[in-house]
Image (tube, rainbow, N blue to C red; front, top):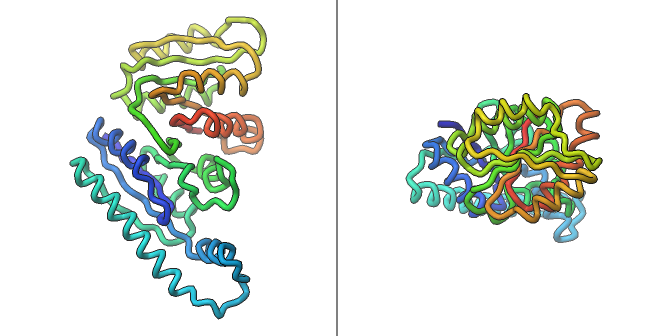
Length: 277
């Protein structure tokens, strides 16, 4: 049993992401909390950009826009409530009307995992798949994050990105602790070696540990440039799969070295990505 948060931009509800989270909750008899986030300051900025209304023109009636937004948020909450109610799971709704990142980071301290859909356009003014809001959430969250694509399928294969670092080992352990119900899935530890070597870093240690957590373990060594070969491999094996990564650290050096790989995987592989510090 666990507490699963699924975070939404209150104005952009995702039925597919909810379906995925409901299946997660049902498999472990867990609580699913729908967190609906709304930042009226951001909404005003979007609206003035959309209609080419200068932000300094305060004569524009923002109260009407806020009423429209309230109606859309209520519709989103109603959709979530209906989906969860029909599934028979235990669920709750939180409506956080404040600074979205601050609100969700607070919620993360009291949750086991956050599910979020980057395709929903959550507080994003750019076309980047992994927007600034999600990047900041990945760095500062007090719990692991599950980033899901727009369309998700039942998980049958687990790929663990392992580079010999403590971060990648911690991610593997956290994933196994949170999802013991997935311990019998086909699980592959993926390691990328830039040379032609087939050596697995800390071979004995990682095999001893992983075999205690997963029943159907395999090990795959890829050769070449990490970002290229890893993404190519995942794209070819993305059917009903999830990838586990420990790429985001809180210090600047860790972010500089590892975040770009995580972003590329999220952007190009189009499969759920489990990330933890």
